[in-house]
Length: 329
Image (tube, rainbow, N blue to C red; front, side):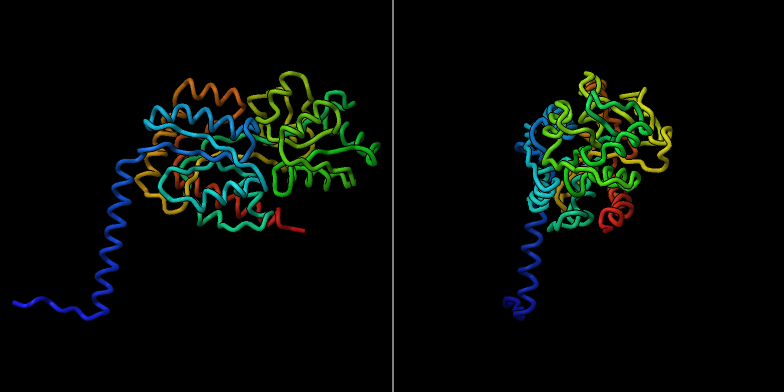
């Protein structure tokens, strides 16, 4: 019997199918052997720049043992975290490049900057890790002890009062915008590229106050280097139980917190996503890890909320809630 002769179009389909099968087989093999080399976790902050960096390093140490390969924490600050997110979006979806995403990087910055990626479609949520609130902090010698006294002081010093802010789209900027709207005052905003520099100036008394992510400034409050006036949440924060909520002080209805989570490029194989999620869930359940994270002021997400689908739903929920507010004139 002679050889089968295929039309040119049919040959093309066969070749394409063979290539796809080879690629799929290669990807499946890579997923089964994952990881076989170091994994990089990108942090969109400077080293030592806040809770996300510290959390990545705590988890990185444990993941190294659970995954059997080194875990490298790499800092890539800039543009509200959008530089780091863009880099991860463009990375190979093989599980070797991950990012610690936060409300600021994925919700705030993605609404405020002209980013080249789609938060909801270009990233693969792996695990929701922690949550923590923003709060209002002030220089230690500011002559106020609550929001009512702060409002009176700001009104009397509106031409010289200074408020630090961490850039467009940040939780700090959204919180500050809300406070200024409530007070109807034109205060002097002092923009900073990063939290550490702003906190140095607040401790030194070069600025009067700012809205800050709680875990980033918790150590300074505990050391009595700055004072805290209110936490932007419905209930008191376990890390600073004596600090009243905004509701308690008469500023009802404005709550702002930030979550942290791990994400990968879209298209990362499901088996890799599941393996990473399992390792992170195991790490977050270990007493030593939990103690370190709790000491940072972070609330570890319940196990059901750590699942990829639950994390994806959280991101979508915050996009729907906050983007219209952030993008409003």
